[in-house]
Image 1: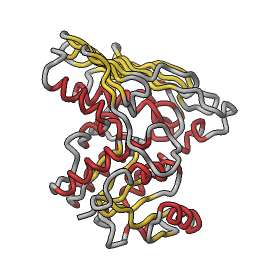
Image 2: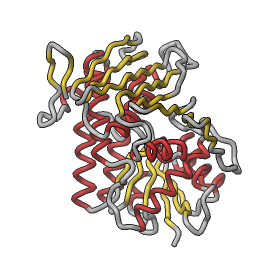
Image 3: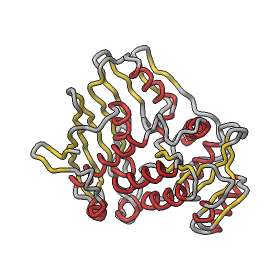
Image 4: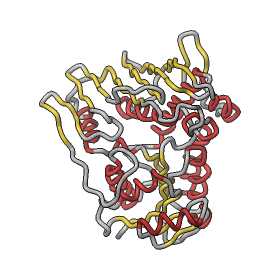
Length: 354
């Protein structure tokens, strides 16, 4: 039976998600409804993608009884409210990264999904690309021996450097950490599978108070470390390397949506499927891998992914919050009152400890 998708938000990323979804068989996936802040935007989206129903409010999508799972593709600060609305109305949810803007809201969504018995997953599409699946398999099979280090970075120079773009606006979830830093942090969390003992961060802010560059070191138990960086001010190499006692694996740029994995035997290529419409973002054809995984989870009656578990989403949120706190970003200052006292981040002489 086809999984019936609803789309929350009619922007660029939702467009790419639907285009990627349509690389999968129609017998497995169908988009049946879309909602936006205006009925005009929803109608335009529905016409382009041949979606049967469109709504000018998110509430209407939430009560659509023919929707099985909702993809939330709105801007960062609205992820929490949109995902919460869908979960409370009995919808499974795949929400774009970052799941929310802070740890408290992340824990809240986790609690709601568990209480309702609904599927919830942060849309960290990186984990479902074949190159990353192969990397994970080789790590788990012991090909690299004991993993000692992860090095990853994601950085670009934003087109609008005037301070007026969304990326410069703390109220719109701007800054490097929330926008692109989530990818290297999530990759390190996937590889090590646990909370770091210590989080160190340094960098600088824009004139609007968001982080333009962050250098992050995560120290784990057993002499293991992740060295990560992110930027919206300079172009970085945008690759990722995992080092073990028996070798290394490298995800070539763009590591967050990779098609090439460097191994000891050579470079493995994973071509992307063809799509019918132009895309806004690099390699968005790969959304098909994510929706394929979600279908498997829903058919198995799972309430969370075994590849992108909620525990990892919480760990990533904790790390991002620690980094923003150390940098003194405006996003952190705005969210400080929401810090969960049961999951504190304490200042110590040797760094910030989770």
